[in-house]
Length: 264
Image (cartoon, rainbow, N blue to C red; front, side, top):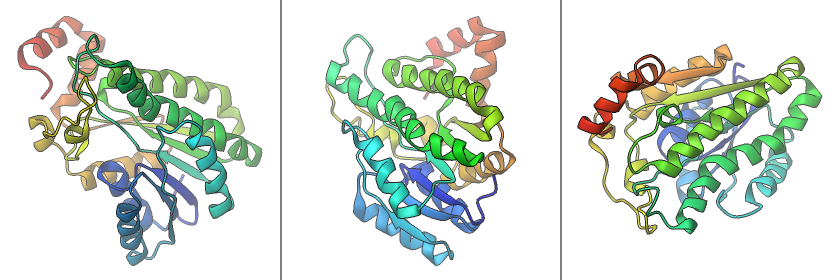
């Protein structure tokens, strides 16, 4: 779906990949509604979008709050009138072992990284199906394709996104719904610094792989091409994306690499 003239709701829009996607979609003529927890950051991104000539509204939203995705969808439809495209870019990282991570921390990660995206889709998809047209874009990640140390709940959530949205695609493709999964590798964002340790504290450090990763703007440029083309899935990154193919064809080699080199 080309964004020109379309109403687009973007979550996780205040920073990182979400912000970069908002600016990219604004340049292409989309009418945007931006959501994230921090209203001041959202307003700054909305101002950037308006400078590019795109209408842009803000809807502050904490997706980890029970009931927030469904209420947010109701508010979004009031503000936009209709939602042509949903971009779920909100994400919360993890830096603690699966065995040591507190249950409350695990539930917050799963709430943001899995439940929010699926609940948003459940809320907006009926309108798209009724009109016979619409697109849902979900940012997953290469750890939705294989696991790694200290990412158990994050990786589980990303794996679950692939299973859920691949299934939804097969349930709805005849009714005009397009589902695009964006699968980035290392991107220079703040997700690792904001990632939760086992006890819920922020990790506070940007990982080396991310420091050397794609600029968010380049990630958004590649993502935009996949969105416009209506692709089912798009890997975005550098050599780290090769782990997806290693997992499929040479899983032993991937295991060797991760155990000796880590994932950065």
